[in-house]
Length: 90
Image (cartoon, rainbow, N blue to C red):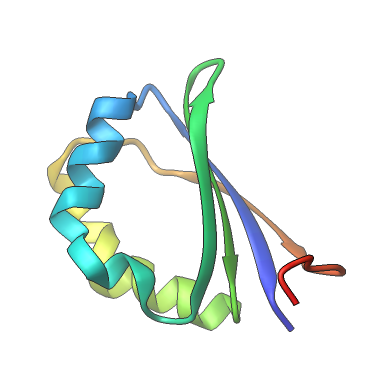
């Protein structure tokens, strides 16, 4: 079953987000990643992701993103997970 994750990153700007996405290149679309929406929040940046599984997201974070965010000085992202009940793409 697919999962959705609402990820908030306090203090991060669009420019900082774009820099990290550029460094990730095409790998950002792997590991079972299905969809992404992003935009500014009241106190930083927000990402809403849909993944095939939590394991894919966790692997992506540990293998590709975790060290990169640390090097860029990002705070720990706040992640809220929920099961996908309905997906209009199918």
